[in-house]
Length: 438
Image 1 (spheres, rainbow, N blue to C red):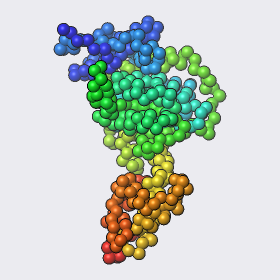
Image 2: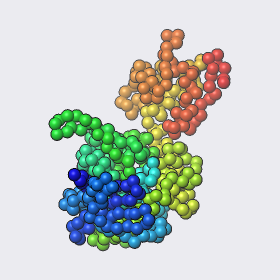
Image 3: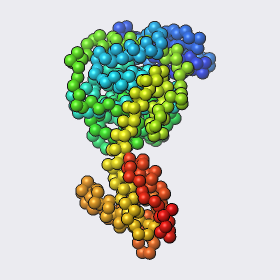
Image 4: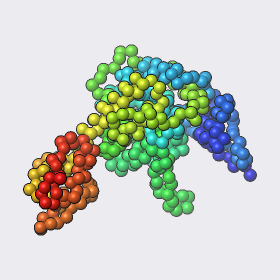
């Protein structure tokens, strides 16, 4: 008996690329098929060698008809990458006010979204600022051109985001990402943290029709564009974001207040052209280590390589690298304001002030409380400080001469930890057990 499977997209073993189409004028779905010889066609279904059949999602699917997920309507005319970038930037310029460098980043990010599955690591775009500063307009404009964009907001529950991301595997466009409740924020952070690297699904326990519990691996890898007012408390996640600060800027007078119907028509035509580009270029693009950003931390070089690999213009790559350097500096500055950073500074100062080889927990606690007691609302005990050092900083403590200390053997780890926390003052020379500088 033939098995029939509705699909959104798939790359078959014979390198055929199959993508879902939706024509809103006809209210119909179909499958676009890109063939290895460069030809493309629109089909009502695709038969597999084993006799199974792939069919398009129903045209009545609420996610599609509501515009929650946007799709191409046809296979557009093929174009070179420079022509597509120019068309994308012209579209962005008409409907959203972005500075030149970030407009270029956004245009290439749109391209990246259409071939993201050729890469193993991705960055995200983030618009941050107060209400009324253009965050949502930026999301709508850029997101409408991306590969299978799925639009959600902070008013959504996290569960459907997991399911739709897993099923459509497109671009998550998330507005008001400052989730109000800690559980939702934690779940969203899992999606965003795991979603930058291929092969890192999020495991969640589901209940089947018999009320039996079983784990499900939700695939969350893919491009994402988010808008929010604050920053994520997870600083590792902060370092995965290319951020544009929207506050403190005036918007050009020629930007329309309301998006006209022409906007949707133009966006759909561009998605059609981008689909043709995906079918022609998917197997010819990939990470190019020679284009990696120089002078940045490994995490930034890794996450930005996919974007830079698509850019032939060396000047544009350099401008984006400068933007990344500024982003790295911002994240390091914010890291230096965390409790971990305050504790590391206290440990470093205690070592420098110590007359012997070790740094006492009591001395570290005094210095930490001077810096952080006001923020925490009270002074922390020596026991709490010792536990924080062991559990959060993963440094050893021991008792010697009746006093708990961070031993001298841990001092060599501090320069790396301080650098990661964005704390620039170096330690004085380490001291050996005999009290002699090493």
